[in-house]
Length: 556
Image (tube, rainbow, N blue to C red; front, side, top):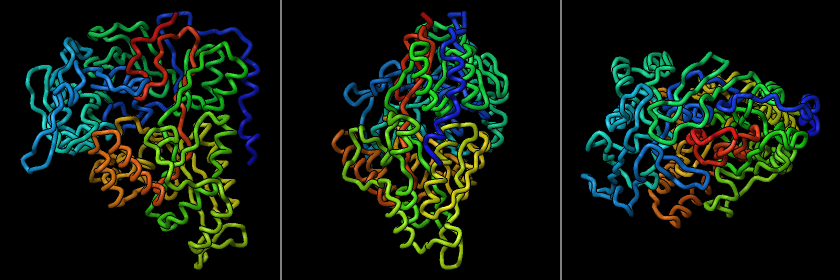
């Protein structure tokens, strides 16, 4: 397939609309954001992915978050705990090991949207749910890093961590105990709780939201509306309404943006493709504001390592050698999204430049396949000694133009080294459910994972992060990768408190990853957004979801 061909498709639409005056919302106190991938489960801490985090955080805030300068700051807490200020301490545990005590004090005046105060009880309840394990909880800044919560007063809690962890002051959202605790106690299984939680049965209940906005209206597959939470004690929101308006595909988003029916749109994942944004920028450079920053979100291909073909590391290395990632990023993104040589970008200060990389080398790919016992058959596809064909299914999300384009290119490139790829484009609900979360894919699955500053790579590489029934399908290790060496390296990394030690431990994790290649790295998403020019105080480039600071946004 020609790279020229895959870049076509939006030019006609752009030409038709680029010169037209904006029909954007006349109401300066609201913002309509175009979106893909409507949520099928609104619970903030169950089956979490990037799409969910980018919606939920309008109305439910984490305790801490990393801003655009990669600085961790309090969102719900009063003072960020550190070793220096004494709110975090290294202590001796009963078993003789070193652990930590971390004191968190909530900001005064915090309240859920129904007026009930946010308290230490909410933190203790959230931790209880994480520790009991019957409900599969998020592993982004996971609550089960703590083993105990001691309530000091209504606003203060002391968490006990059984290990010394550098992420001791990064904590996610809490849940409203006054609403969710009775439901949790009445449901002993993940399936039962997910069906009964108010986040899914009545998401417009104001008591579910503690941020500057609360969810006030939704129509399945069509829209979600957020309006100011009157009980938010911080800066009052400038916008009186934020409407997430959903479309089936990115081409429809482009048309609606150009027609002025929506005011802003994220760039993939969850919105228009990066190539669509670049085309739009060329044809209408002044009509919109284009916010672009380097990102940490890795587009990768998970491989089901229970498949005997993919269990052979030589095959995995051959696949990566056969994919021209540089050409893909140049053709689709004009080189503005960096090729991924591993789980960290080359610009990351912890990137290990000494680990092996897998440049585009079809000759080396064929040699590796030959070593693994595969030879080209009569139809051009490799076969083994038994005559089994080297055929793999590649699944990804339907309607995501970028992923569909890349899947077609990969199909063509791998055919050149005698590997047959059968593409499967799957609706989001199915993809994020049974196919990926329950590992129902047989070969390859393309999706993204974000390694923010506080997120351990364990979420994708640890053997305890393989989603399966006994952990309620929590984890993003969709390949099913299990390595004692990697588990040990991850544990050491997670215990490193100083920069130099962290760099050494990161280097070891990257070395093992490069040797065993449990997933295929493609590129790093730039953090990008397209919006009407009058949207200002827009914190694009934050390392945690930018919606955490949505109360600052305004229309000039």
